[in-house]
Length: 270
Image 1 (tube, helix red, strand yellow):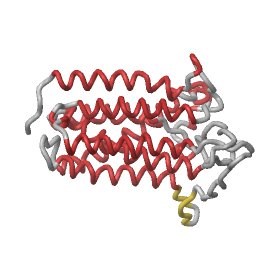
Image 2: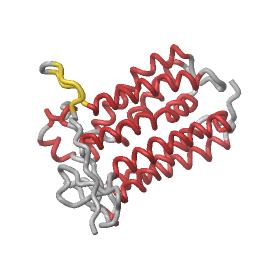
Image 3: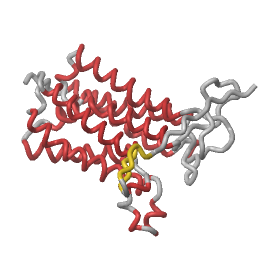
């Protein structure tokens, strides 16, 4: 017997104002940035006080640029370099879709380094509070993927009760992998970071929470990719892995190394 839930046909355009369309994907980015900004302001109010609330306001612009520019350039370089080399004028066309988490993460890392240097702050402490807030945006981003019916999962077993037939995924019921990833990369990882921040002394080891985020996201992404349909133009790569999994391996290793280094270094008391 085959099971399949009805995919909720949600218009990707949340609001149409004449010729201007406000898409759920754009609202996901805006919501993630604004809620993350408020969350970071709450975190910096407690020791070790990574920065002032005014500096958090300033960093919001840096983070926005890091996410958008890094995410887009990461997609261009990691996923479709040949296509964009032949069509360079399409690189800034964000409304056509195409963002990379790994590229966005590199963009935000660079923003943290430059911002910390400019304001003479500890870049690892800043990175820690930013990483605690990042799963908020990741959660909303994956929900937007689901609304758009994109990045859907692989064909599901015939008895999976929550399998769905996606509009662009053919007639077979598939895993709603966007929701799996929203839960793993967003809700679960965000909860873990919150509990570590709130109930342990890890926040006094600069860089440790950043390491937990990187390693945790990498592992969550690798698990989520088991259920996600690989990008059609890439398919399975070396060893049967997907691009998302291969890009996550160095993230896990770097995150683990950062945790070890953080606990070997000095603790932050103020």
